Length: 111
Image (tube, rainbow, N blue to C red; front, side, top):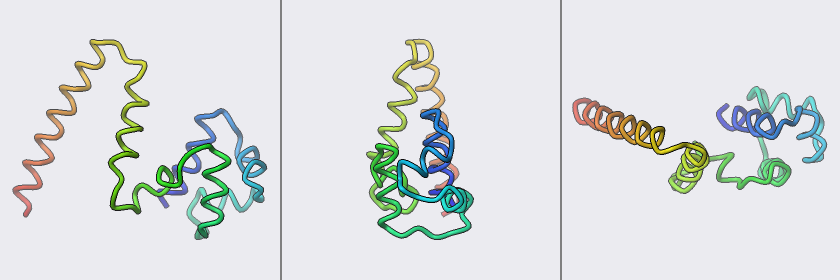
């Protein structure tokens, strides 16, 4: 289901309609719709076609299914922060530090 959401978001970020992704990946629009909504399972060749059409790595599409994903999240975080000014960066740093502290505290109390 998460891969479908990422596949839905990626063309939107490029300003593409669903039909554009389908065309670029050599797939049927209805099939792409089923992928986005999680109504169909994906074969590896289809994932590769979609990744190539979007100019992203398969890791970016599969990151919730992989064990080694830090590089994917590092890239996404860097993308989000690249247009921030110093005040925004400082605010995000404080948010991250506070959130990390709470998450680790909660994890320690539940284990």
